Amino acid sequence: MSLLVILRIVGLLLMVFSLTMVPPMVIARIFHDGNWHAFGAGMAISIVTGALLYWPNRRAKRELRTRDGFIITVLFWSVLGLFGTIPFMVSDAPSMSFTDAVFESFSGLTTTGATVLSGIDHLPASIRFYRQQLQWLGGMGIVVLAVAILPTLGIGGMQLYRTEIPGPLKDSKLTPRITETAKALWYIYVILTVVCALAYWGAGMNWFDAIGHSFATVAVGGFSTYDASIAHFNSATIEMICVFFMVVSSVSFGLHFAVWRERRLLQYIRDPEFRFFVTFLGLLIVITVITLFATGTYHDATGIRHGLFEAVSVATTSGFSVADFTLWPGVLPIMLFMAAFVGACSGSAGGGMKVIRILLILKQGIREIHRLIHPNAVFAVKVGRMRISEGVAEAVWGFFSVYMMLFVVMLLALLATGLDQVTAWSAIGSALNNLGPGLGDVSTDYGDIPSAAKWILVLAMMLGRLEIFTILVLFTPAFWRR
Image (cartoon, rainbow, N blue to C red; front, side, top):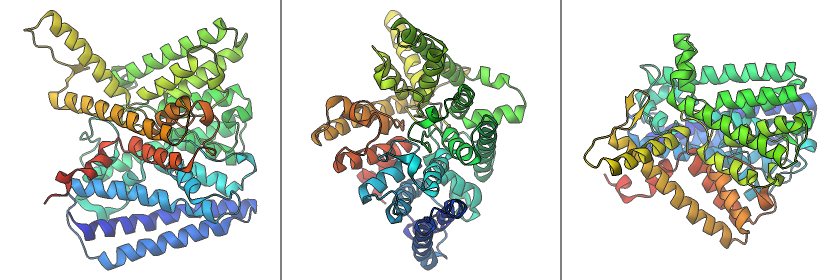
């Protein structure tokens, strides 16, 4: 393990992160909200701390190993989350405790979208913009951004990329060079953001809301500049734009790149994960809309609008809202919430366990049924034309097992803080899946739950964003042996 190299890189990345305080400072000046000093303080503290880590170790240069990548990734997300709290704490509005500031910062960076704030409409414009920007940076992963723009990481960038990109098939690269791969991902990410912002603006949002909501939409985050979220605009056009980009951003960015490179839209149809994802979403939407009409919840086209939007928003782990789905009748609240466990596609900005893992689990389950019928036969698990190795299959089951065990452990921990069963179950599921909204006492915000519960949820957000093993591996004795 190269400690000095790790400190150098973390210091360098922290100094780069300090530059993200500039856009909110500009917004503060434009809107004259008197809040520029909060971001100035955040920028200054981040630069100084980064320099103190970088300068003494500036000559430390060694090739990064896999274990170094794990440490840097976890350290960087933790450090960014903590330094991201500074504007929230320094600002007079909102006046936040350290715990609340940490929760809001980590929720933004992990694209969870859970919030402890209420009265968002009345917050300074710079704070509202900063929350959206945090989600945008976390959406594709600022570590991947660092690999793209910082050549000082050298060939060790692969170790960071491998620990950052979500999904079970992490070694597949879009281009021969890892920096080019990271750049390709970010080019697609930025283009989608710009197109989304222009679409929102054309549909009637002002430039501030259009940019802010495009950040959160493409990041599959769910933060909004209003308490009412997308419902604030009461526009079917805006809702459909949001639905489109939530779906697009929940598809693998590697698949988007392949389509762009090959100039063939058929690439989408040929991808098994995409087909399963679209089919799953379609069934969820149909069941939701039919149930809403069958129960008399809606009697006009509003039922289709709200049913479609909420099904896509929750299933993709975006967390935007146009209606309070927790108040819908029957099985709908639980069904939609459970859909978030499936989540988005691997290699996307979305959360959940990822569609490809669920698909592999289903295929392995079918194989076991066939084995019962034909004990001596050999059945291969395939995704499309690709045969899945036993190693990948075991890794998927290992992930699923650890995921469920962590869910249970943290659920018990939340119950121990005094939360009721529905609130605790939905809160931990929402945090671990990077969803945002929950049921019970956290259906609107997380401001009133105990501080201990908030810290547990922050850990859950990190575990969900970095897909569990990236963090858990640091707690194994074997990781630290020479």
